[in-house]
Image (cartoon, rainbow, N blue to C red; front, side, top):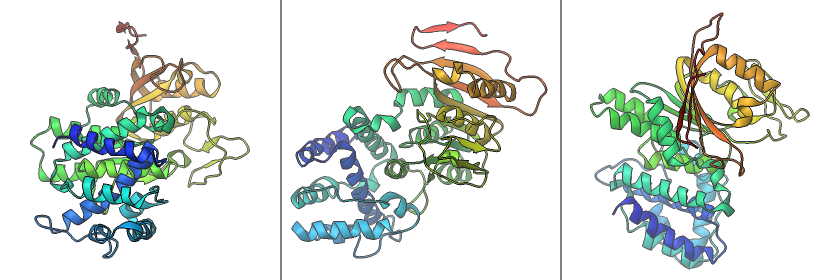
Length: 393
């Protein structure tokens, strides 16, 4: 069975659950809970024979053995139990909630749709692409609001192809959403380097990628997306649930790929080793930032510069205001042009991101060593809206 067939099969059942008031996002989340249980059980059997990370009595066979109200109660208790665990299990099930209203529909999903497939035996491309297809369908539902964390995959692929991550490099997305940039970067390295050594494969699977996501429910989807694409393991996935802007994490990366969230910083107090969010000024203050502002994109620009190693490369989606805003925006742009080689600007079609009419761009840059003169000498501009290649400025 190919990924498109799996997506269609799973999505058809979502329409049944819509009659019970379950949203597309709720459906994908419940699928995530159940898929993790099923795959953990599969890998505990031959030919994998791995120790199951799920406690006996809360695993897939225990769920499969029940029906009716007993199944309903057991499912709720299973979510509560696993939500209190640490590591990947806690990330997948944290802040869990049963959104089913009808035990018969839960039973049908468990028995007819999930149990009848051997998900672990599928190739990572098939099951990973199937799950990503569900996320894309969810993002297309404007009522769900899921589009806020789903970057169109053709744009992700184009950005990754331009950055061209290499074996042994570390890759980061500080606003990872459902993990699109991370698994696209993983696939690029694997596809363009068919003769990776065992050490390089291990690094790519376990150490190369790191993503930060603020929203627990979105991080859950990212974690499952990573696992289904063969990245990380039951014990460890490269997703951190935290506000990436709160502090310098101390880690530096060869590549940063990101589509940061749009808007002003919410008024919540978050403390970190080097930064804090002020509830009074609604701004982020960090020692490593060039300017203090409440503009999220400007703060992410500063944060991404911090995350880059010397000669590290970045590709970032940004709205027009970051390119032309005065005040803090002007200060940040000047410092970025001075300390990095900002060599390419890709102008995207209007309305692709943000509100209708807001223009978006991708900037490509490379961090450079300290210098008295600016590193940016020429900026190539490509306008995707008119398919024009403009002269460098």
